[in-house]
Amino acid sequence: MIEDQATGVESYRVAGVDIDAGEEAVRRIGPLVRATYRPEVVGDIGGFGGLFDIGRAGYRDPLLVSATDGVGTKAEVARLAGRLDSIGRDLVAMCVDDLVCSGAAPLFFLDYLAFGRLDSDAVEDLVSGVADGCREAGCALIGGEMAEHPGVMGTDQFDLVGFAVGAVERDSLLDGTAVAAGDVLVGLDSPNLRSNGFSLVRRIVLELAGRDLNAPAWKGASSTLAEELLAPSVIYAPAVVAALAAHEIHAVAHVTGGGLLGNLPRVLGQSVDAVVNCSAWEVPRIFRELQTIGGIADDEMARVFNLGIGMVLVLPSDEVDGVVTTLGIHDRPARVIGELVPGSGEVRLEEGTR
Image 1: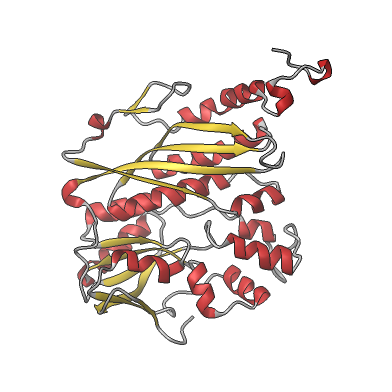
Image 2: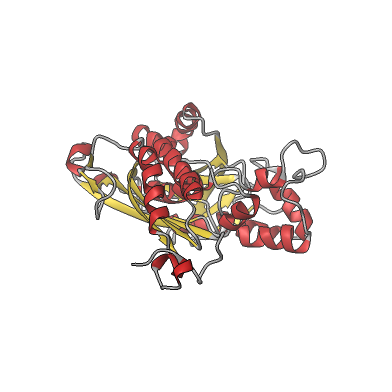
């Protein structure tokens, strides 16, 4: 195969796919990937599939739980800002924090990276973030895929998708059947946007307001707009897994796209409503700034963003103190934000408290 465009002969490189760059990227990410390995990992990167010995993980009667997700158009903000080192962590958070909603502890992770033109530095930055997130979440990065899409994506464009697998004992599965009127809602703080609502963010901040990502986030801010928007997602999984192991918890809801209104109903069933006291926590300033810039209605904000609560645990009232303490030990501040009452599966945000 001819490898130089100057020869005038067609080749894969001329078509836009650089095999050598791909091999260099794999070489560079090898140490990052191996640093995430758990004792259950079998083999090494470079095979056709990642291997994990579930028998060594200590489960009696495990159910495997899987989740897949991306980071949406937060990837575009990262591209525009030239900051790719933390968005891989966002990817891990989106996936593993879905797993714990079934009661599962994360075991292993795979990623898919797509580029208009493969750049080894970009690959290393992205995978470094994924590896950091995997180590914090306690899961092994056992495989992945890098794809080059010339002619389909711009040369500096990229996207990333993650896939996580965890396990839960069959008799510990959270399926929503245990929730009952009188249960308390404990919300875990989210100091930033995490990875949701960025299509709206981009429209109001970049397209309509024409803001500079490198300018202060707001008047008097010590952080730039890029730093606020790209602040990495909190990974709740280890703290929630610890709470599940030590306390009676009836349900867990991951507050992603759709906010509390869209995600709490997924664990309520049809016999209770969630009454949320929105004055129970302080909404981080970035949300208020976005609302002001875009003139966004309160209801729309609540339907799009987490507004400062990234995860909700549903539990009996006598477990609250212990759960909040356990979460705090794992550096995840939490507070009571509401309760369940008889109803039909709806979420009611208390009026006048947003």
